[in-house]
Length: 319
Image (spheres, rainbow, N blue to C red):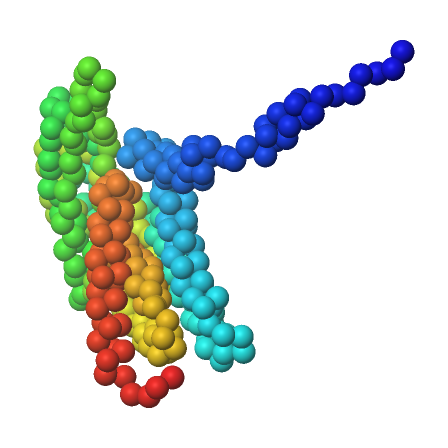
């Protein structure tokens, strides 16, 4: 018995099903996925003390790589054989390498040089800072007494001394509450503050003296001493040189009748990293990241674009 041939109507229906254009939701699926990933990272940063720093690292890395891609993409608009192509790529890679290191060491600091515990005002401890220590950082940790309310603030003072050089460190312990699902949720009873020393630099002995410990804070006060190879002065010098190179590339790109966003993209990366390294504290991570982002966008992005436009108008040469 012969097998019946499929009807032409059935074949046409199958072909239409196979070649049916994607739905509107499918078109926007990559954007929705990216928004969901970014939203998840932000939520983790604000809600999880344990995994927040890893989410912050991923968010910072994605932002830097995205801006680096925007800068790198300018090479596709340059004609083949243009000598500016390798220069643009070299400056972009230099900016990325110069900022990833300080950002990583800020979010994930090296192991402490020393940890001391001070119980009452007047207590002192002797520590030795070793290795590459362009920046010496003190982190103060403490806990409020059990009878302190859910809203509390406590000011403490510590002195860091090396020889005749003394620097007073003042910090604030703060505990607040957020409105949870139908009830108040205690955010933290243990706080930490990061303080970059302005006058004490490099390896050598260091004396930590407790000057003031409020009664609302339960002794002892833990002071963590860290050393970092990057100083704000060092970063300011390096980033200034890179900013000049970025402006030079931006001018060259615009002289080729190409709408350039190079200075703005690289400016965000440089300004964000510089601010983050000088102000980041794990205890106030969400607000510090937000502040660094605003400095990057407004100072590096908008400010970089304004400076770039001025530079284009006054820079000599045609190409």
